Amino acid sequence: MVDNPAAVLQVRGLTVRYGSVRAVHGLNLDVSAGEVLGVIGANGAGKSSLVNAIAGATRSSSGSIALNSRDITKAPVTERVRAGIAVSPEGRGILAGMTVEENLRLGAYSVRRRDRNVLGGRLAEAFAIFPVLGERRSQMAQTLSGGEAAMLSVARALMSGPCLLLLDEPSLGLAPIMRQRLFERIAVLKRTGLAMVIVEQRAAELLEVSDRLLQMRRGESAGIGRAAEMDAESLARLYFGAAAAPGPSAPS
Image 1 (cartoon, helix red, strand yellow):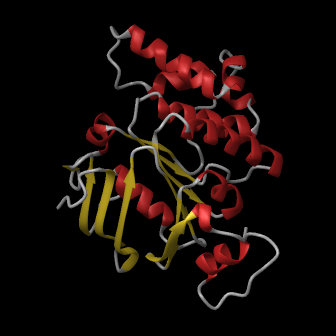
Image 2 (image 1 turned 90 degrees about the vertical axis):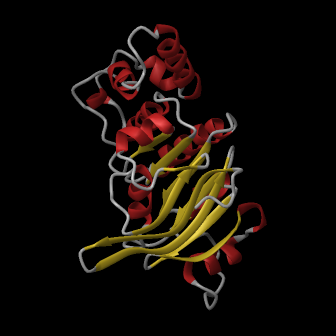
């Protein structure tokens, strides 16, 4: 059921189970055009299960998912891609034996071959947002640094022309300087007006690019707040719960 037609993404009562294990339970969220929703939580909180359910990689047990007021709860992955959902998965999933440009072109598989202008435009946009990829366009993906590979994963997702971008742990395994560079590029991407859901364990960088932060704990929402109104203390409360003592820095 769609009760907020202005939302790009609307999730209501979402529950995801793996056998007897409940990974997500009764989750509600909306994401508007141009909004970045950050999702934080410890390992096992249900963050990736949420992303996979929205993308269609995991079947939901109950609840509903709507994209631009269209119910996609039972739609297969390919239909969701055509509808406008793109994912940069945990682990990145780039093809090491292909060049940067070949990886990007693979991300545009839904574009008809005769639509060369569309494909060329999307390549140009990807290289504008991630200039280092333009410099490496003929380089094999396996030779990229960790940060460059993370950027390639995000850029490849953009090649499908989405209205909603899902990023699952984009900074996983990156050194601090590479995390900073990646989130600088995500901030540039945000200015394009794309709706995004970004899952991260590291809340500090996420706070810089998010409009709101959703804290997940044991598959449920443990709190949500506007990022602009948060400081280290309020972020710690959101992350650890109301009883958390303020700390000198954001949790990692």
